[in-house]
Amino acid sequence: MCLDDPTHSRRDFLKLSSLLTAAGALPLLSSLQARAASEPDAPVRIGYLPITDATPLLVAHNNGLFEAEGIKSERPVLLRSWAQVIEAFISGQVNVIHLLSPMTLWARYGSKVPAKVVAWNHVGGSGLTVAPDITEIKQLGGKSIAIPFWYSIHNVVVQQLLRDSGLTPVSKGANSQVAANEVNLVVLPPADMPPALVSQRIAGYIVAEPFNALAENLKVGRVQRFTGDVWRNHACCVVFMHEHDLNNRPEWSQKVVNAIVKAQLWTRDHRAEAAQLLSKDGANRYTPHAPEVLNRVLAPAPSEREGYLASGAIQHGDWADKRIDFQPYPFPSYTEELVRRLQHTVIEGNSNFLAGLDPVATAQDLVDDRFVRRSIAAVGGLQAFGAPESFTRREEISL
Image (tube, rainbow, N blue to C red):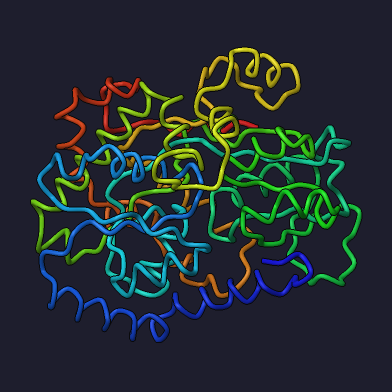
């Protein structure tokens, strides 16, 4: 989006809203079926946005992990918006994507897209960045902040933070008056958030990395709070795949998930190397980000954590969590709690389908964990990812 064209993001949201309806998705699903019939042995085709959420998919490609599993993969396709990701996926142009976890609910239940979550892509990896002169959340009253999308963990977390500070999240037009106790939420692509902060169009933004780190490096913003310090080890982006692949190509699907799980494990042990290969200086130039920005996210110096503890960006030091971490198992308790919270979150557009979702039934239907359980077992179990050896957990949410 160009900052002199504030309608662009809204047009993108409206396009995605149109795609994610039964009628809007129908022609794309027809294309998907035709592609599946004509190319039953399609290679891995990844669609991604240039954010750290895509790390396991890109590492798996860079390190030849798909080929090591005996399947072919093409160069990942960099896309510029969630609308482009969804359109490419539903039409079958790509068959493996990372998608905002709440958006998978919209896709499956709002438009009946036949796809499922097969793994988490990462945990944490997001933050609320504010203008340098803002030191507490209540100072955002009467101002606007940006979110990457209505169906995002960012929107869920920031609305809880605002309410806890006595503020009311709203969605108003560009020229509308915002009351002193309100905070206007606007959707912006991640890359447009730092410039919007500099130009004072917004007072802050909540988004995936490395755009929080970028604001820090440019000295145009400061991290007010990490989302993983509010909802411990929350999923942000998840791996989404077509049901026809999961059902008709189970061996291929297993190998795809194997590669992604191994990529997560490798990244945990090679954080600085991962930052380099993802950067604009890497051989594949997967993202436009500088190595030092990505390194601040993936392999920060110990002094960074000390500073965040002092500033309050981290308030649960005993959690000892990473700025971004990797653990592939999609815990049902997370999906259940996500459904409950989305049902009480301000979301622009038609979100009526959310009211009819039962949290437990949704967690069982949305996620297919057959493959990831086998993949995790093959690399040593959940303990290999620093997690307790259990496929259940209790969600920890604390402001």
